Amino acid sequence: MKKVFSFLAIIAIILVSNCSEIPENNDPVIGIWSDVEVEAASQTSKGGTTTRKEWIFNDAYLGRYHQKSNGKITFKTDFKWSYENDTYTISYPGTDMADEQVSMKASTEGSILSDSQGNTMALRE
Image (cartoon, rainbow, N blue to C red):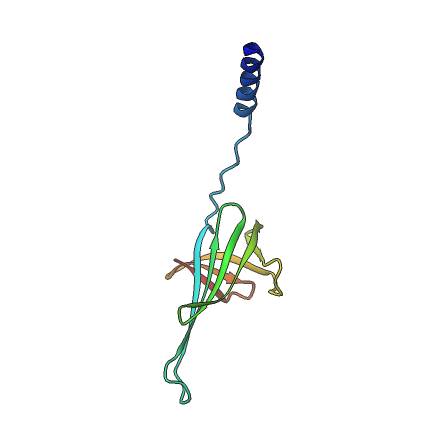
């Protein structure tokens, strides 16, 4: 009986050691990107409104999107991203949000994500 367990242990060690490694993703988009919009105070409201959009890209081609108003989360969802021909495609499954096509550019402010018309979508934090 000990021989059977020893044999099974050796087989298990061989199988575990032959597992392939997950390739490392070092894409420069990985990290936190944000866009902050400040709406000035109006005559009807005392304080202005700050809206912050935040994309957190991870190395598994997934991420989390948050939208905050005055520091409180008003909307959050997960997203998928892919990269092809210098363009990132961000899709938000399970929501009615449209897919976004963005590209990464360098500017005096740092790295930015811009849409297909060249408008800044987000800045790297």
